[in-house]
Length: 267
Image (cartoon, rainbow, N blue to C red; front, side):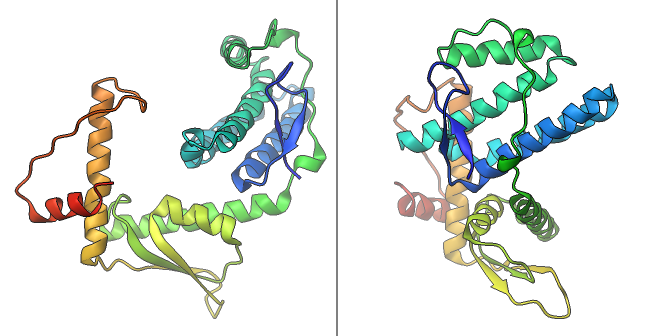
């Protein structure tokens, strides 16, 4: 099982199960990091330690946070709290890990977490060194997530080659020779923006990807609506509006496709 902390007396007092595969992956990655960094720091190998930190922070920001944005903003309180607790758990332990090499930023992260969680913490530099939990390291999840990211990478390359932006939804991608359950397939579908994934049995080619790039009128309209949402959200940022600020929106266009997209996706 994978565990997240509860916001009580301190950041790590209690833990509860979480079934989200991204949560399982990031906490497993964190415990691998704690294990490996501990060994390296025992040998005063700060150069290799720094490399591990760079890799982990890259994974945390460009994969975990990016793919959990909807959970962080979810109207479902339990889903939102669970995601934020996992993120806090990771940052709390990461701040202790990086403290010897980056004393100031680690203290800033630590104090911000204490403030957010309403916890009275003195200093990250007075903390004990974190210990990894072997039970939280899931090698199978790591392998499947690595394959998931490889599929995403190759599909995005196909999109770029076809000059079809990611915001334009496509009907499907066909993947041959992989064994992934729905949790991982859903991540792929969301990241590469396709309606569905067709998993084909392996043949002479152990692993291959084929992207359906045919744009039907329905897909074009959905793509236009997503592009409009992006422009509107960018304009909201310029006006310093939060998600809680409600607005009256006025759009003017002579383009029939845009008009049709507005009518179909007004909601």
